[in-house]
Amino acid sequence: MDVQKAFAEINLNALSNNLNVVREKTGNKRIIAVIKANAYGHGSVSVAGHLIKKGVSKLGVAYTNEAITLREAGITAPILVFFDRDNIDTCFKYNLTPTVFDLDTAKRLSSKAYRLKQQLPVHIKVDTGMGRFGLNIDKAPAEIMKISSLKNIKLEGLMSHFSEADLQDKEFVNLQLKNFKSLVKTLKQNKIHFEFLHMANSAAVLTMPDAHLNTVRPGIMLYGYGCCESEKLRPVMSIKSRIAFLKNVPAGTPISYSRTFVTKRKSTIAAIPVGYADGYNRKLSNQGEVLINGKRAPVVGRVCMDTTMVDVTDIPDVNYKTEVVIMGRQGREQITADDIANITGTIPYEVLTSIGQRIKRIYR
Image 1: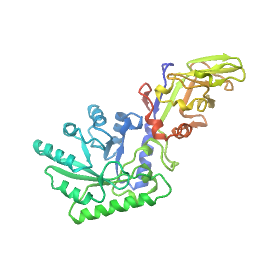
Image 2 (image 1 turned 45 degrees about the horizontal axis):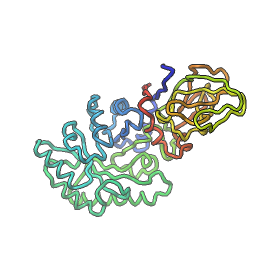
Image 3 (image 1 turned 90 degrees about the horizontal axis):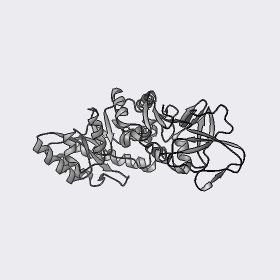
Image 4 (image 1 turned 135 degrees about the horizontal axis):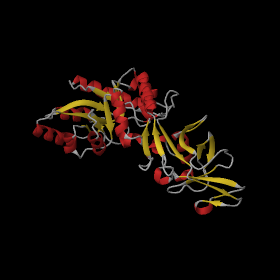
């Protein structure tokens, strides 16, 4: 390994384990595996290929450009595009399943499908309380009936999204689920049926069995994290590097920009070749830790664009090229995306998706 680089180690066995947790929780319901945002930073092409081999029903991405990346890499599995309503030609060119959340888009898709003499499967999204994309739940029956009458459109799926399934108080999400089920019942009475019914994100997979319907849509839990931190979930990504430089300094030595840290004793400072340009948040300055020789080494001074300094004075047998674990396990110690999120005031989703492209992904 080039000592000037950090890398992300992606554990495909952990990914398989987490997929099995989804199946255990849902009784083997069909799975739409969410791999948007480069599979939450893990690398969409490799993750998609592995999940397809393990039997997921579909892949879910945010926008068509993410789907194009998968198609051009040879991924042929069904891909559901969640948000992109403008790139209609792309859906046909790359055999993608669009999510429809307004009548106008449905009409444009129908017109294109009719001209191409193709039958286009779509998933209809309804807004049950997220306040984002989707047909208004009150108007949805009438709108969906209009969409069902359009030529060359196949109503394959009906979906919605929970706004707070990760909270212990389930009053609002239960109302969302109730309204969704009521809509399904109304549509059935009007002879409109869907092959895929899905609302359950990771939090709902873990805590809301009634929301599993016939298909689930896990994202973050595939990568080892969840609202209730299921003991069976295993983080898939580790970030590792090596010490790039060691310096012995006397007491009173300022470290990094703005002199926010000054040594109080004779110290050994290690420079690690990872910084905020790589997704290592600047808020970890004087707050974060890394693992070296199975021990915790505190971040000292400001995190730089390309470099972070840590105090290794109390860690024996440290030298140039000693391994550093920035996120992951070493010996009995572990640093998770949750740990980093707690320090930086965010959520593990942001920690994972912020890992930059300079960090090479290596699959084990």
